[in-house]
Length: 178
Image (cartoon, rainbow, N blue to C red; front, side, top):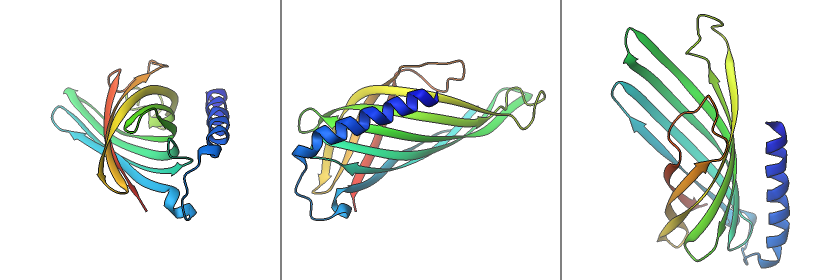
C-alpha cells in the first residue's frame, strides 16, 4: 500500500520534470493554482453524501498535478432492522495530462479510511484503510478564461473486498483559477 503511493509520487515527479520545458508563461505561483472538486448525493434506503475539494497546480499548459480530500457520509437501511452508518475519509493525489486541447488522461492514487460499521460488535473502534489506484480519461469544457467543468471515466485498477461504488466510475467536477 505504501509502496504504491511512493511509486505514484516518483512517476509524478519524473513527469513534472519532463514537462517543465513546456512550462506556460505564468506571472506568479498563484496563477498556476486551481481549486475545484465535486460533490454528490443520493437519498433513499441508501443515503450517500460526498464533498471532494481539490487543489491543483499547472506544471505546464498540458500537465496538472493535484491533491484532494474526499469526505463521504453513508447510511444503509436496506437491511432493516440493521442500519449501517459511517464516514469515509480519502486523501488523494492525481496527475492529469491533456492530449488535445480538451481531452485528457488521468491517474489517481487514493488512501481510504473508514470505521468498520459492518463488524461493529467485534471491535467498535476498528478503522479500516484501503488504497485505490484509478486510471482513465475525460473531457473538459471551458466556462470562462480561467475555469472549466469536466467529466471523466475512471477505472479502479485494484478492486478489493472493501469496495464502495461501481467500476468504472463517472466523475463530474469543476476547476477555477485563483
